[in-house]
Image 1 (cartoon, rainbow, N blue to C red):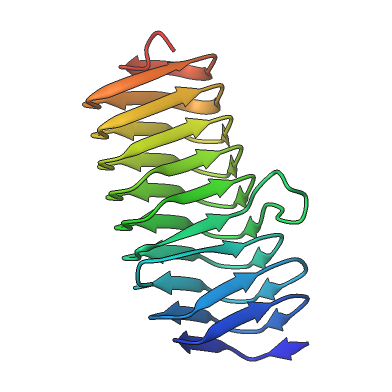
Image 2: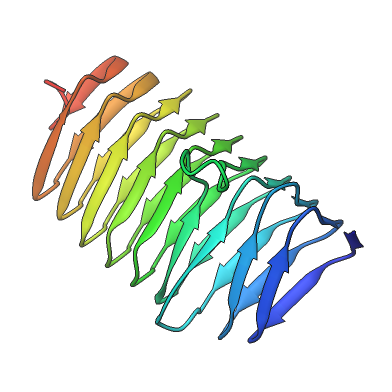
Length: 199
């Protein structure tokens, strides 16, 4: 089906095999599931979700511009390698995950520009993504996992409480600094600096 744009504040939104020409904005209560074969021509913005038991998903979709998930208290999954029913997404612009207080995972996505994970207070994962420019993970106060990503530009991991950085392929610099605790290894990069120098 074809939709011009969608703005959800409360209620439930399910998009499958749907073409949205413009932007999709999701905020407030309710839930959402954006899945296989959905194309969003503009931006996908998800924000201000209240705390709740449901895990919301964006799977197997194409977003031509930017995806942002912010200021939310509900868990979200953006892409996933398994199960196959929830595949990674293609995001043409930036994927930004910030200021959330529930767990968030970005797994198996192709991101055309930058992937940024910052200022989250619950566990955050960036795993198995392909990033066209830079991957930045910073200022998170719960555990972060940064594993198995392929990054064309720089990977920077800084000012996190507890972080792990394993088996990333970085075209330019891998730099880690000012993390309270960090583990890592098996990364390849043009240069490795700071806490990741030996990783």
